[in-house]
Image (cartoon, rainbow, N blue to C red; front, side, top):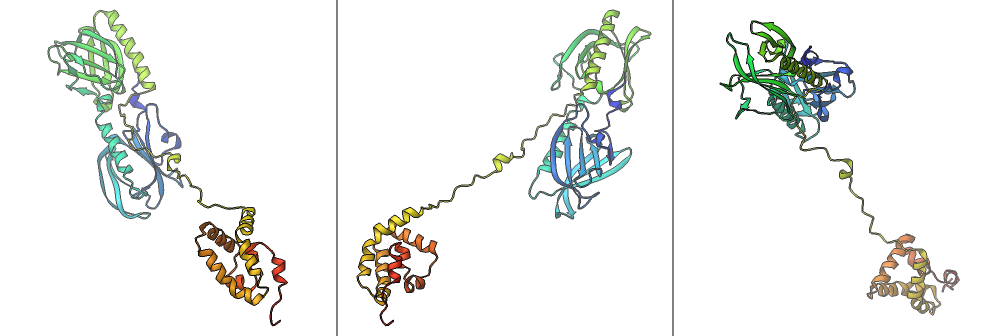
Length: 383
């Protein structure tokens, strides 16, 4: 049996310029947040990139050149802080500093959010890293931990107990210790009946091999942990032999299921999600403008101003008309005929004629829409 940890490097390593296949999420890895417009200020200053936050690592890659990238596993992170950095794209601004250690080499990363006033970079990375740090029971072998409460296993979120075997001897000492064995979908747990604090929790992620071997106590279930967890060899005696074989078969089956889709225990959901485009779209209100057809304007002109025109027509003189019309028009527009005044101004604006053109060229009949040809034939005194 090979440990699922053999192929798991995402949370335990710092890598640069990884392949497109290595950038993809592995089984059990979940993309939690994706941030655009993130600059790798220390390594690629002035280069706009994208930051992917998963439950195992953070990935940054350049937008212009995706092969320029890096992957930082949470298990390598020593410290995360925020400081002021000098960005070519933002100038002096608040940035995320990440100090890591991988293969006895220290790396420092500085990420800057190019979106002004957005704290999302800090909240996402810091919160997910905290969730990773507080869920190590899923991934690390633990000795003498707080596993049992009132003789019951303290279950982790999404953990289920598949079998509980009483009367199991731990063969770590010469005389052995009698205790209880739990088989779950995440790990194997044993604790001593006389002292519950004497216990061990072995996640499937850390199991290197599990088999039945002969010992001075007879046939025993031997579990060897991975080198990263210390390379422990733990023996458990289960009687009768049929029960021992059934336990081995069940553990192998659950380990196979776990390896296909591991549960890493980092469950985090973003509280602030980007608003959809539909919510950011502002409805355009129609302009409060009433456009009246020419027919209504003509009807207004004829019906409302016929009396004024007939009065002007009686003078039969161009110069007299030229003098009296402005006065009569002023009185007409100011006598409280609000609707008439509005329509008159619209007509004047639409025809774009100045007051001088309106008076001196006989445009009164363009305004009145009546008898334009007749006014052009009027005799002018002195001509």
